Image 1 (cartoon, rainbow, N blue to C red):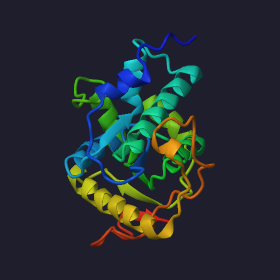
Image 2 (image 1 turned 30 degrees about the vertical axis):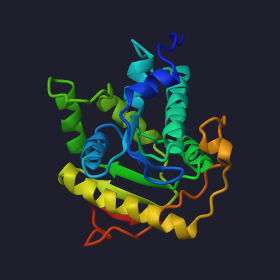
Image 3 (image 1 turned 135 degrees about the horizontal axis):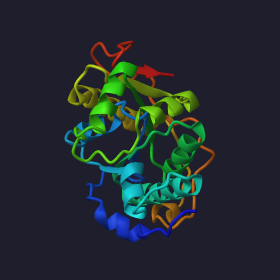
Image 4 (image 1 turned 135 degrees about the vertical axis):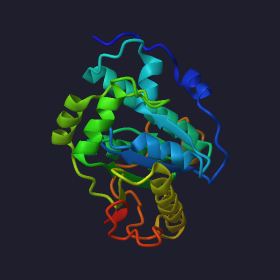
Length: 250
């Protein structure tokens, strides 16, 4: 049975740092990848390059529940709170990164719908790493080597279960392999892709939204989460096209 939620939306939002105004409707970067793939490390490096606010399921879970059980009801409550926080910050015109495994297509579609509901371009990034590298990272995490800010409880057993349940991303997105490249290197590629996607959305995408959705008062907003408005192979630069650590996928 799920325990009572500790904090409200407004209390959680007050704990998040402010990000500068970027554009009307904001801009959303949806991260996806299995535990230990390196998502959060790349996100931290990206924050140093581009002002944005990060909303992660691990952080929200720790704020809502003293002793998380990871039951279905609790997971749904965590994601619903994340959606509300994302919508709130996008409505203020900020760049938002949603840091979560997002291994199910249904979850990704829900996030895309949140972004579209306020007129935000949505960029998708999938981060992976070789199994042997992930296993080493997870072992290090649970044996005294936890990185500062790492709130995940996932271990190798969880990784294997989620790998079997993972549903591939069908929308345009960028894939990064963090097995051997430094997070800062991958963050640079992701920054270029994200900004190129924002630029293209001005010309290629017509968003339908109203003043109520921009104020952050709408209940759900958006459509059914189809095409994310990604840029395919635009904006990567250099030799990243087809490169194992940074390729765009249509």
